[in-house]
Image 1 (cartoon, helix red, strand yellow):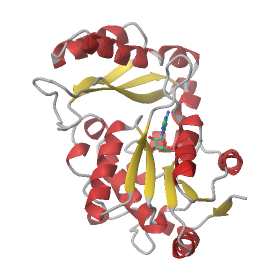
Image 2 (cartoon, helix red, strand yellow; image 1 turned 90 degrees about the horizontal axis):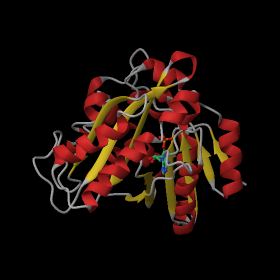
Image 3 (cartoon, protein in one colour; image 1 turned 60 degrees about the vertical axis):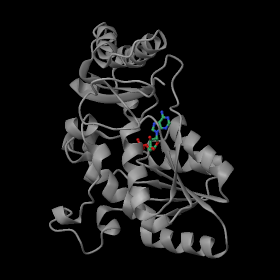
Image 4 (cartoon, helix red, strand yellow; image 1 turned 90 degrees about the vertical axis):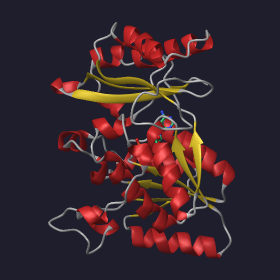
Length: 293
Ligand code: AMP
């Protein structure tokens, strides 16, 4: 039986009693509309911990676009059924007021209450979604306070988010962050709750993102180390599909930089964000990445 709590306070009490009983807790934070990518994180957490906790909270602090927040898919009943089937111990939701009791002013969190997301928040997602990572860091910190897990599980699909959360965990002195591989559709498209919002044209175009990343990897494997040429390679593939490219970039994962590095040697990751055609004339923002070496 999966326990469901609507309030973080109840969740905190349950987690504390489990920890007091000596049971390890693995934690998977999500925004719901669960798919096999989320379930892979839960699966790994179940293998490594005695109890697994999943949070479902569409965090308004990390949405820079109100339309995006409004359109974000939500289906708690379906999510709870999937987690039950998986054998997750507890799932909790919450409201902004519930996570920050007495701290909101006119429904918003005051500026000074946001955490600094650190240097990995610079560039790419940080540049295209201003304020996104401070919203992520602030809520994840609060979620960690509620659950106090031993390990927390995040998907590589949100590569820069993993770097931000790793830095946050370092500053807090835990939990241990476990980064799990990206789960994909058969045609290569990274699973995402947002894929539900694509229309036919957008769905057909979306796998081109992964093909562009693969092209960069093929070039890398062929000896290409020039960042500009790796990016050009991705750009050429992306241009074959109706996608609005925000960025197609490479970075050194060991030394994150806001700008494209002048050169790469042993370590590289390629990252793409692009808009695809969504239902009712909307635009669906998709991201993906691939470690080149
Ligand atoms: P979200 O609900 O989109 O905030 O995602 C919750 C967690 O699931 C994050 O750590 C994501 O990186 C992870 N995740 C999302 N999509 C995938 C995927 N396709 N493969 C693996 N992990 C994923």
